[in-house]
Image (cartoon, rainbow, N blue to C red; front, side):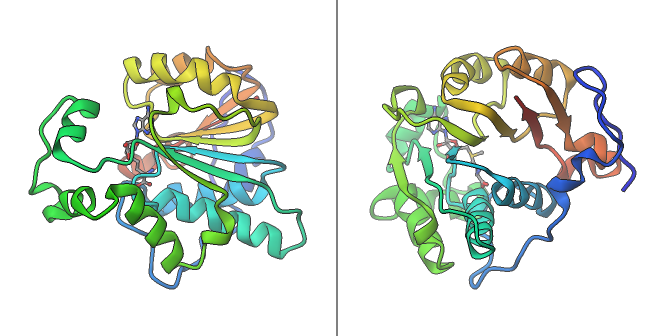
Length: 236
Ligand SMILES: C[S@@+](CC[C@H](N)C(=O)[O-])C[C@H]1O[C@@H](n2cnc3c(N)ncnc32)[C@H](O)[C@@H]1O
């Protein structure tokens, strides 16, 4: 793999980040749920969960595409002898057009993704119910400890995490809202994975809230696949 390491924060061996792509992404019985992450990004999440040394938190599962990759990593980690860890996931869990408007400041587009978004919102129990069903269909429920519905900012979780995946840092305002609390939930040596971070400016802003030792943007590893490699790993 032709890697470019980020030398701003730490000098690491050329192949240092290979561990995040070491194990191929497994298939699931019902496939990965609809969502916004590419196979490369899911592979990184799967490996990050597989390597996790303690509890795992996900902020922003939507219908469980990323959750599936994380739970598969925890399943396989456990299968290979590691002790089970807790995996908590939290989402607004939208149940109506009104909630969509309130949380995202825009109207729910009934045609978005050929109606799949509206179908999930109007499903009995809303998007979290679809998330839980998707995990069940892929036999991954045993690897999720808590499905939490609500705003992450108000969530009373007291646990400290070893791996935190966050899919709610799409602009500076979201980063400034999310990162202070996220930073407090990190245990010693926590690894963070953020989706949709492809500019140095955003990467630096996120890292400024964390005890960052080093970070890696997948777009640096796969520059030719710009559209599909958009996660950032931060090791603290
Ligand atoms: C881009 S989607 C996540 C996609 C998902 N990770 C996947 O793999 O398909 C972002 C999600 O974050 C949730 N979200 C945004 N801000 C949040 C917050 N403050 N608390 C809880 N959930 C939030 C939204 O409801 C939405 O489901």
